[in-house]
Length: 148
Image (cartoon, rainbow, N blue to C red; front, side, top):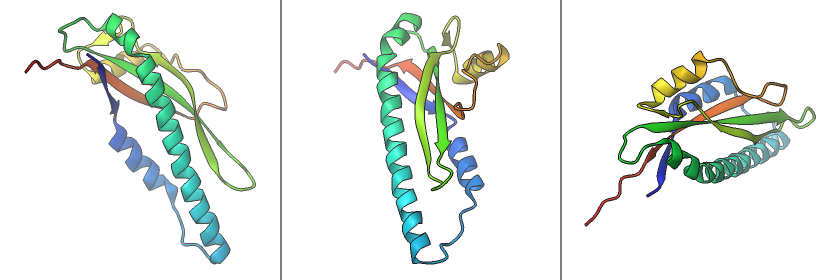
């Protein structure tokens, strides 16, 4: 058995970030090369960040087993805090993993919406500061073993 993780509101987060970008066409060859380099570095950074988050979620599986009863359809919410810094001279932004935590107590909830309401209703427990820029949420449930 394993824990299946699904990101909560991933589509909504993507549509907001794309709408806020406001990209303009490059003015010349140099601008086009810089834009291409930024695009490649951004993709590489995203892949690295996602790999780090996946590793943390895998590490959190044993915690999830502790809090989700066997045979239950309940789940667990994990929040991931991300720091994004932008180099003033190049304009390149780098996002990195800061922290991941379980929402609770009691840690297991019947839905991700209920877990998010609990999380937001009990005040933010997120680290604060200039380095904290965003939070991603992941809903984990016990996978069902299928016997054939």
